[in-house]
Length: 168
Image (tube, rainbow, N blue to C red; front, side):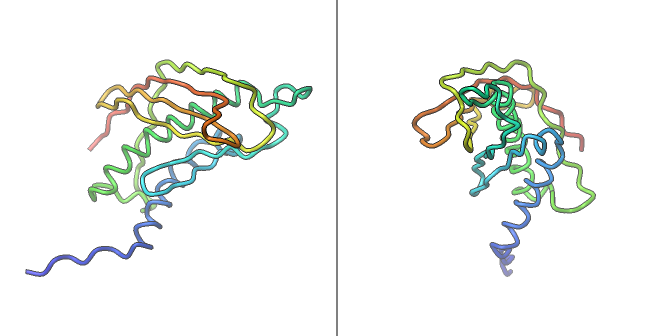
């Protein structure tokens, strides 16, 4: 009995990147804000490239508080969705790169609390989410955002989400 040969690493990377791209490009608001996701294994870093339209106070200038909150919330939702997708993809139950594959519905926000620690400067911002608890129906996530120095956060948030059911 011979063991099945593992997939080439490039095929695995392409499949994962295609799944993440499908997930992110399914939300028009993410494209409007310009949020991108950098994937390293199963870890995601959200990137908000600076754009003049994101400025809320032109006198400082500072990122708009709503943009900051949206950036953190999008990061949390995509992290939750990616973790669901990752488990199904790696177990072989889902081929997210296939064109007819239905991706999971996105979690729905129950509540989301943002702590604005300092003004967001007119430059690129980064965020990472950590899932504190994720069950079949409910998830709790903490998100941190920084710009030049990861140790100097400009915002953080905690959110609770209603997890979508999976059909099939």
